[in-house]
Length: 260
Ligand SMILES: NC(=O)c1ccc[n+]([C@@H]2O[C@H](COP(=O)([O-])OP(=O)(O)OC[C@H]3O[C@@H](n4cnc5c(N)ncnc54)[C@H](OP(=O)(O)O)[C@@H]3O)[C@@H](O)[C@H]2O)c1
Image (cartoon, rainbow, N blue to C red; front, side, top):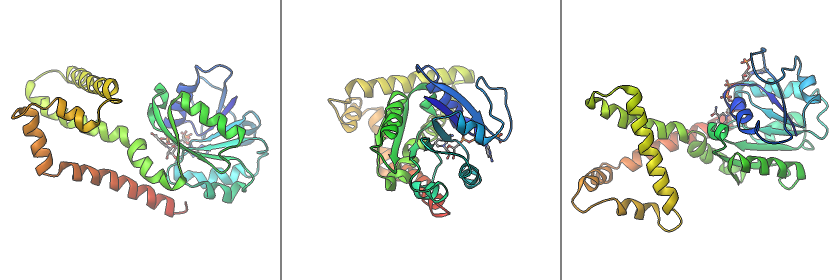
């Protein structure tokens, strides 16, 4: 499968990194400017399209219309267009490329580089053989889930932005740990162990216990965890955190409305 990246920024690099160990893959990219990258650079959009089976639209939402206007002039027969662009619908892409063009819309996160992304998938022809190939590929790069397009805004707030929100939570722990007077990198190592240990505890028990039960199992009556969780409940920290997810979802909806 020949992959052509239109734009080679953070996300395209992560996808490339996740895909490059797969057998039978070839890669090339086109961007505003040539960079020192380990894959061929195409001087024109036309040459990238000619060299690719799958075209990844890896540009910012505000740059998408210009890219689609250029793509429209290329021979896209038998090509698969894959768009991870936040807030831009399949209908928006079809408006430029036509309804006959196979368009796959996905929402991955940067963990795709480590083959650990949770990726939403939809397509204008989800059962097309080429669309199924993309779905299967995404399954190798983490967990892929087929989702109605109307669910993409919520999905983006949880799984697209999720890594940043979880890190922001860990940062609160780190700031609290400044009292220990330990070097910063050691604090990071300790927090990494904490999060890996927690993930492992979740992973090992997730089939048999709900998250609520897992919390209960590590909460002794009258102990420190219970005191903290009581504050969590009475101060409605959960509701505040839900506000973070709602804000992200609202932004995704706004982006969809502004030309989505
Ligand atoms: N980053 C994430 O975690 C993430 C997660 C899910 C979805 N997404 C989506 O993925 C898309 C890309 O995000 P990103 O973080 O990778 O952005 P980025 O790092 O800013 O990269 C954008 C790339 O687009 C290229 N570009 C911009 N205008 C262009 C043009 N007219 N012609 C050719 N190339 C052009 C840039 O090239 P130059 O460097 O040469 O200007 C750059 O390589 C966004 O739409 C975002 O919504 C990102």
